[in-house]
Image 1 (cartoon, rainbow, N blue to C red):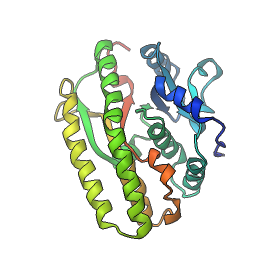
Image 2: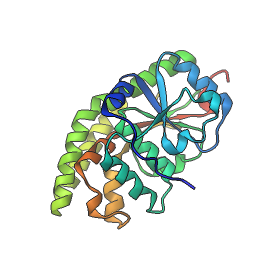
Image 3: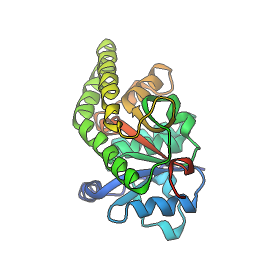
Image 4: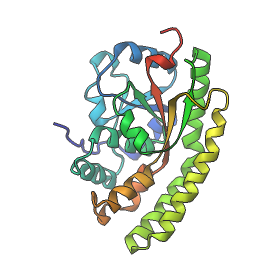
Amino acid sequence: MVKVSRAKISFSYYAAIVKNLRGVILFKEFNEELFTWLLNRFKYRDLGASTSIWSKIPDKYRSILKLEYPTKDLYNYMKRLLNIGLDYEVLESLSTASTYISPLILVGNHYEKFINENSVSKVLICRPLDTKSWKLHLRIVDYVILDFYRDSIEESIRAIQYIIRGDYKPVDEILDNRSLKISRDVKRFWRISCRDGNPFIYYIDLLRLVYEMYLRGLIDKDIFQYDIASALAILPVVIVKYEFIEGI
């Protein structure tokens, strides 16, 4: 049974983690070969996992950081998400990655259906990538969330204000503008992208995802507190699986 871990970290510790964090990991079943390969790509940077995912990581890989909630509002938000009947592990991981200003790294195929159905755009590739290309594009993915982050959080705060007031037209305009920015941003992956390949990177707009959950009646308006804006960024999701890795 999944439980929501209570916030235990100070803001100072949160800030120290964010500085060196390069990815938040999501998986359903632990794959030691893929994890060993992934950790070798991040020898000098940290990887983390949401509380529900971290509990499934074997002890020998506990160098992966457990990422808890830095504010009470975020803890309450995660607790509400647990109760809506959707897959909590993926929702928590997406929200945690946004809060820690880090790309989400999906290891394996499970959860890709959810990611695909809720993505705004994607980058397709037609061939496996060598080590040099993986390192380059994992670094570029890190730039994606950093480049978007300030604007997307300010937009999310404004959207929360409009939702609280029941004024939804400006929210739709904010979401349309974010989609336009995403459509332009995918061009930074020109070195590897192709037209008829398989999805390697997804762009998730977490503001859109949560807003649509609200419109469908899955969550109530009172979930929209200003502190949850940090969990409503534009987030890149990288897929790590065998067919994308050359020589494994």
